[in-house]
Image (cartoon, rainbow, N blue to C red; front, side):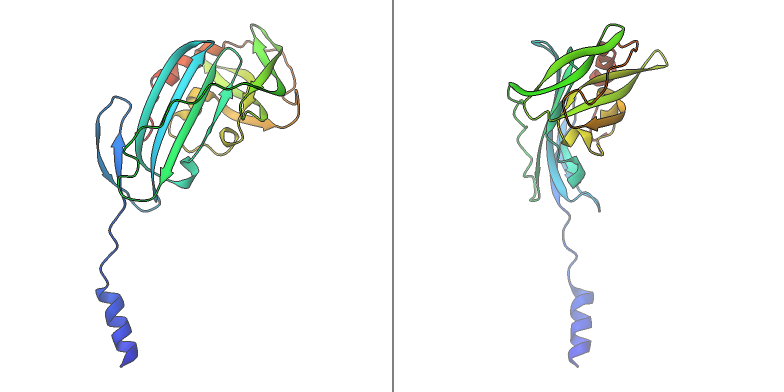
Length: 204
């Protein structure tokens, strides 16, 4: 009798309601999203890109996400720097406020190679939590080129944002230790990354 009652209770147990999150696209349109299996968190993401003191892009998006999308950090190629801040939470509509803009970062003492013109033997100071050197591949007019600089640990992980790899480079290789992203000759053009960045739409 006890076993029958237990089975009946499980069968009749109401299905848990799905998590609901605020969903906002890069164009500013917002609504409510019901999360599907595998997306257990609400996220609010802010993505900025700058060259020197000039801001090239500033996008805020939100929606359902996975733990792999709870990233904080930056990729810095010297002339061009991108930063990502993310809020992750697990209650209904907990992501209804946009993430603040990343704070200005100071040099942290780490040094890496960077590309300048035709060569990748320039050096740069890493900022904030950029604790790795990075080498990546980008495409310009169908040709692959190499970009080098500094990166935060989260940005060296398996990035799970659609389109983000196009903005910061593909085939990323990160290492620790000063100048570990060894210098090499290449035809680098850092600002080529601006074009895919501007068209980037997360949570598409």
